[in-house]
Length: 103
Image 1 (cartoon, helix red, strand yellow):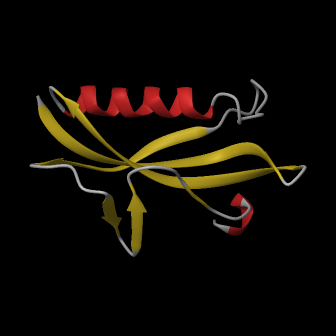
Image 2 (tube, rainbow, N blue to C red):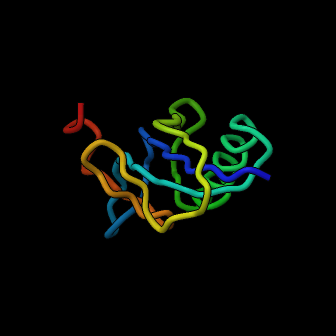
Image 3 (tube, rainbow, N blue to C red):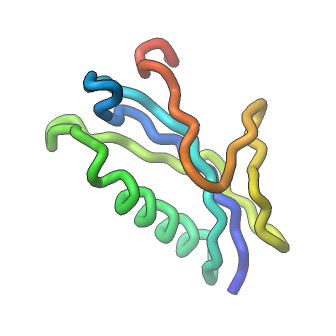
């Protein structure tokens, strides 16, 4: 199997934090083994859905969105991924402030 580093951008995530619900966005990176880029993306997206399912409060009419910001084939897994000016750990999330402030 091949190794891939995948960076995901999540937007419009309604999350409860500090007893307040608010919309937020995130960047996250993951390292996965897969046969090709399509399989790597599917594997990463599925893992995010499982990880976040109990935290996301969005209604069916206002679903969150996840997009692939970058994917690259790597020779070995690293503990971080560089995207533009951000250093993303391959575990956890880099949460942004209120999405409205990001655009």
